[in-house]
Image (cartoon, rainbow, N blue to C red; front, top):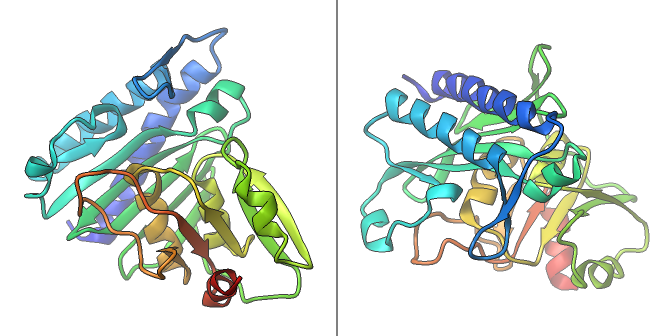
Length: 264
C-alpha cells in the first residue's frame, strides 16, 4: 500500500477512535484517574488506545507501535526500529475533561526518525487534518471534500497561537517582541494545525512535550509549507534518544517568523 492510500485508511481509523471518544465525552459523567506523572487519564484515552493499536496490528503487523498509553519500552529495544507507529490516543485530555472540544487523536508513521504520515482528528470539531510525505496536507471538515492546505505569507499583523492549559510565564514575555499581534489560545496540537491551515503564523512551545504530541502534526505542517523546528533550526527527530521528551520548538508557517524569534 502506498503512503497516500495508507493515509486514508489511517484517517478512517482515527475517526473511528474519535467516535469511541465522543461516546464517553457525551456521557453523564466519567472518571478521571492520574498517571505516575500526575497527568490525567480517562476511559476515553484507554478505549482510543485499544481501538488504534488493535487496528494497526492487523493492518501492518510488521511495524511496532509506540503509544502514550503503553510507552514503557526501553530505548535498547526501540533503537532497533526503522519504521514504527507513534500514537497519542487522546491529545488534550485536560481539554476533554473541560469539555471544550479542543482535543484530538494523533497517529503518525515514523521512518528513520522522521514522520512520513500523520493524521490529527478532532472529533468534537469534526475536523481531520492529514498528510503524507510528498503528497500534500489536507483538512476534511465533517463529510465535505478535503481541501489542500498551505501556510500563509508574512503580514503586518502577526497571529500567534498559544496553549490554553500550558501557557506558563514565558508566553507574555515572548509576545513583548511584537508590536502588532493577535493571540489565539487553543488546546492540544490543534495549534500547529492552525499554522498549517494558514490561519496563524506561528506557535511557540517553550515547555515540555513528548514525541507522540508532535509527530502527526509535524508532517502536516511541513507538507503545507511550514516547519516544526527546535531552537537551533533543526526539524524535530523521533526515537533518536533514550528520552521521549521533545526539545523546545517553534511551529512556523514562514521561516521569516522563526528567524525573527531567534533574533530576539
